Image 1: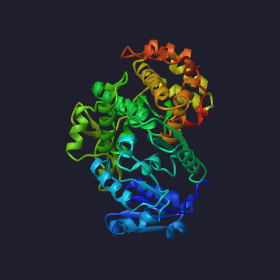
Image 2: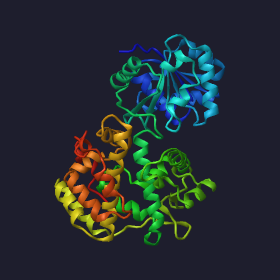
Image 3: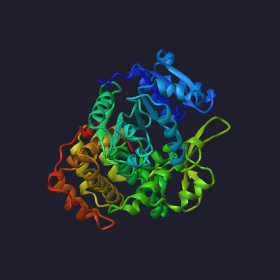
Image 4: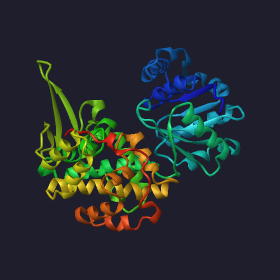
Length: 437
């Protein structure tokens, strides 16, 4: 096991930088230099880091620092985790400073989900390239334990394996290896599904749009938070950055699913970024009597309105079956129902499975890693587990032929490598299905 005693987290005042600092201090028992532009921000981040792991006792291992102490911190460190802004010029400047003062054997990793690991690696000298790779954590990492590890062409294989073991054993991560592709595996699948949900919200704006699609894809479909509500939670600006990157730098069969709807660009321009600004796709309005009303952006009207309750008979039947533990009956309800909303739900469920399998067989060594990615990175039922719940590959193919709204799902499913048509699920699907609307 790697002996990592001192770590520098650069960009520690960011959400991910602070949270990962807390993990390293709490589970790795390491001293963590938390480097930020201003001492006030670094000190605040240290408190956030301790709180994020629910352990005030680690506060003495979280040491706030500014860039004035950068060289000293790096020269003492065994591992540097870079978590600065997704800006190539900013990262390049940081890496050049690391290169100038690092001690032999220093491990450097990046938390990027937007840039190529190979391209970033080239900023270092040959020795530095061997000890550089990606460690992509998910937010909040205390609850979402996925960590994608991505090697460059020059990464030392033994070090990569040793660091993967450290992340698993010491930091309690669910580690999967992915290839150096846009957004890697978890975000590639997750943001494909969420952005397609946004596109269909626009397509079905006359029926209600955003809350209509979220109602069709509720917790009974195997996710802790509905897809469009998740976008609001993540932040519209963050969502845009991720889908724009994938759309521009990939070319798979459903690349068009990453095109951001115009109405979302409009909200971003107005500074309405989602939950962090309490205004975006959703908004909570507090009345004079302190009552709270949940509002949603109505695409057709171009304004906010109160959240609606939709009467979806198929969903009620599924939830009632799940309440008694009869999951198979719940899925049979979905398969038998031919109402507009049930067909839309089936289309999205099979789209999720199909895109996951197609993507995973090119991005990950094991297709069932898609289950780990989505369960441990998004708190969603894994696509392989969901396929099993629906009766296996042949049943999913039948549903694809019945419910495909775009005309490509069956062909893509049939084109998957034979060995990947019946992979073994990584988890039991039942824990991810909620018996509520």
